[in-house]
Figure 1 (cartoon, rainbow, N blue to C red):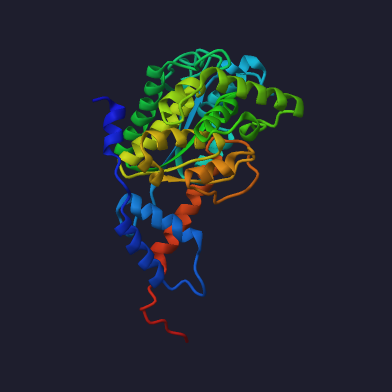
Figure 2 (figure 1 turned 120 degrees about the vertical axis):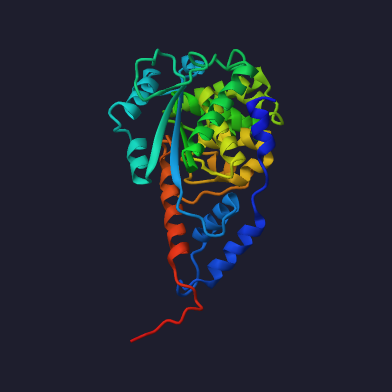
Length: 350
């Protein structure tokens, strides 16, 4: 049995009985007038995931998967492909990117991984070397990768999750870096939801109106050429996805198999979540949404997943930044849940 098959088999539904007990505990707490709304939901979901009525505040690992895309040559991005190289280096050399700052803010360890950068990164210390290939192929001409490469990219994510879980991490935030990857995610989400290119294609890194029209044409051509099967997540990933999407999918599946939470970020990680959902529907129970991306189809994509955003800050960045903010919100909610007094305790007023 392959690593992917073993992982999928291990994923079980979250504990509804524990969630019920967590709700009862919220109801007993002395929090003043009213309640804490969706902050309570964070804790209840996390309790169901861990199987613990009163969970500890968890250690967090931020995984940023980096890869390049063959569709870049279709001129769908406003930035050069070398940006992927520069940002990957920034995560581990100067450690000065927004992702690093947010990881520090939410007390997360940042793991940056080369899944398929179109450049030799072997001399970059601290960058996890897991390159599947030197970028994907151009999806307007055929599949992005082989099915075996897609499976391998998922298994890399599983391996990362399992290694960090052994080190005591229980929450993962996932993000990505790869110029032209919103073209791939538009194709993926279009395929999964039977949406055409106009419905699903957004501006990515804030491209012009003219380039957006071109990007829509590219997305539609990729969908027409490849005809990805919406019932087969690996087929969608292999035909119109990217190696970083596979890695994020693997982290989600690996975390779910070990009763750990994954907080998804924006449009790209939502595409990966659809792959995970198609492979194992119960995996969605182990996912928490975070921010609402500026990509036009993100909100309806979350809705199709059965999720909704907690944060709306007009973030376009990706790189797990919104997910990191959400992790801090989870910590806050858990702290209130753990430290508030029980209503049954007598409160004395002087």
